[in-house]
Length: 179
Image (cartoon, rainbow, N blue to C red):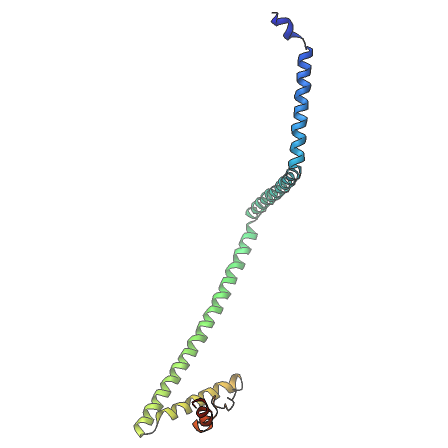
């Protein structure tokens, strides 16, 4: 057995083994592409699109950082931006304070009106009159005063009762049912 002579040069056995391995590899890759080719293609496209998206976001971040660095280099821009922000906050706070004052004024007016109604109700009770009718009259005056300033009140239409009339109308019908 001569080990050195057989392993030194390419022999016919090794070439056949290399060709056979290549055929096996071609067969394996061919069957893999035949079975999963579309999936592999779609995965490759998805990976490509994902890489594009990531590279765009990284580019935007780096440009954003450059913009922040430029803003840090220009203190005048930062000062103007902060002044504008402070002015906007001040305006919003003033609007909020004005709304709060209007709300408090409305609440005071409502409390005053309730107090007047209670006084009127007490006076009518002292005189021996019905306080409910007086209360409704006062409420109607308040509503009419408020409605003239904002809108015309809607009058309620005269509604008919849900039932026909009385027992006498339905009496023949009931008698017919119980016979």
